[in-house]
Structure formats: structure tokens, C-alpha cells
Length: 393
Image (tube, rainbow, N blue to C red):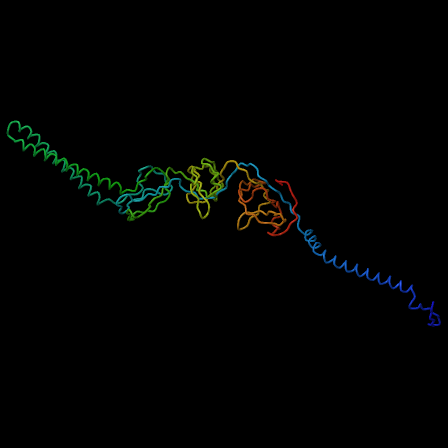
């Protein structure tokens, strides 16, 4: 073995020769160790890059709010329908001019009064018509006198014809004269009767018993057949509410269903009954009218607005706690979680509203996962971590 000696700081150092096998083995070990460290570093680098996305997703999942949801299902409920509409006379009667018209001299009724069939509501000046009626009555008297004279002459002629003082031809002429006088009397009587009927039609009369709703005429006003409606009446004072309902409610609503009607601004409710369900649907609004008959009450004013709760029979509907129902300018809605746990808005129409629950008339089929509460703090499209609750919570 070859050695080289040198002196450094007074010490003698032995240096291995370049062909020493121990040195070569140490270099090999060091190289292998460096390669292994580099491989481990590279593997760690790629593992960290590949695991970046799952870590972010896991973090996002951990940050999603935990929200209680329920699947409401469907249950049989006593169905009630909430509706709004207007009050009106059940049978409204417009009253106008039936005759020639003229100047109104008196108006005898005011809105809110009850009247009988045929009662005079207003009178029209008839000074000219009265003179005409008197003239025609005089013509009737003249025609009656002519008939009486013709009948007397005929009777005398019939007595004399047997004695030979009057010929049979004279008798026939007197019979014709009598018949002509009778015909003139009939014409005069008919003309006089027509004038009397015209004079009676000058008065504005109630076509049936009922309640006067409006008055559109005053004394001194000139009226004619073109004047339009002078009075409006409610026949028998009967009232109704014309409730606007969606077509799916109309289909299930039977005639005879009971209803409670509350006029706007009043705390009093009135019992009524559905007497007619609209046979047609408005193609624009997809709504129809249910007409609810009501007894007369001074608080029921035609043209006013009212709300109604109608008993619509039994039905199966989803039910939710009131905390699940939200509303804005577009109407009522709930939040449902889709298969990806993303919140989606769902517009709904409410059915029966109780103290702690609400039935959903339309918008849900009962199989959705509905957010029970905290909906006000969520936004459509937001991801949540749903926690299953019990229906009715």
C-alpha cells in the first residue's frame, strides 16, 4: 500500500492513494444516498401537487353550513282555500228610461233604501202627455155616443120594417152604421189606452223589490232612452263575493261549499255558500270566479274588497313548518336541496295555514328536501351540508 506523507501544522497526515478500494466504496454509498434523497424529494413534490385539489375540496366541504332539511311527504288534510275578490250584488238590476222621457220633476228614493216592485223611483213631467190623454178620452166619449145613437136608430128601424114603413135596405144601412160606430169606439179606446200606458211609463219604477244601490238622476234633468242607467238595485238585497281562484282550486271546489267572508277593514266575518263556479277560465291569468252568496248586511258594500276562507273538501298535500316559508315581492317560496346539496328556490302556493304549520297547495310534490329554517341566511346556488330532520319539526 502506497502512502504520501505531508506535514501540516507540525502533524504528519497519511493520505490514501487514489486507487484505495475503501474510498471508492464510500463514494458509491454517498452517490446512492444522494440519488435516493433526490427521488424522495421529487416524489414528495408531485404528491403535494396532486393532493392540492382534494384538500381544497375537503376544506370547502368543511366550510359548508350545516342546515336541517326535511322530506315532508303528503298527508290527507281538510282542504281550505284562501281567496280574494270583490263584493257585488248577486242580481244587480240597472233601471233606466222605459218610455219617451222628458224632464225629471221628482226623485223619490235615495241609495240604501228598500223599495217594492213597481214603486215609483222618479217622476217625469207629463203636462203635454196629460192633455193628449184627455183629448183621446174625449174621442172615446164621442165614439161611444155615436155607437149609442146608431144602435137606437137600428132598433127603431127594426120595429118599423115589419109595418112596411121602412125597407129592408134601410135596416141594413143602419146595421152597417152601428157596426162602424162600434169599430170607431174600439179604435178610440185603444188609442186612449196606449196613451195612458205611455204616460205611466214616464215614471221610473222599480222592476222588482230590492235595495237601491246608486242614483244617477236629479230633478230638472232631461232624460231619454239614451240616458243610460239612472238607478242600480240589488234584487232582494242579496249580495255575493266574486272570489278569484286558480283553475286547480276551481276543479276541486264543489257548489254548496261553505265560506267565511271578511270585508277589508272589518273584523266581522260573514257566512256564505258557493252557489256558482265559473265554467270558463281566463286564458291570460289562468283564473276563474267562484261566486259566494251572502245575506244582506250593511257592512257588505258592493264594489268593496274582501277575503274568504272556503272549505274545499279533503285533499292530500305536503305540510311544512311555518319557519320553512319565505316570501318576497314575487310571492311565497321555500329552499330545497338538490342531489348535489345545492340550494334551489321553489315558488309555492299556500293552502291551510295553522298556528305552527302550513299546507302547500302547489309547488311541491312532497319528495323534496326542504330547508326547515335559516333560509333567510341562504342564497340560491349555495352549497350546504344537509342534516336530515323529522317531518313536522
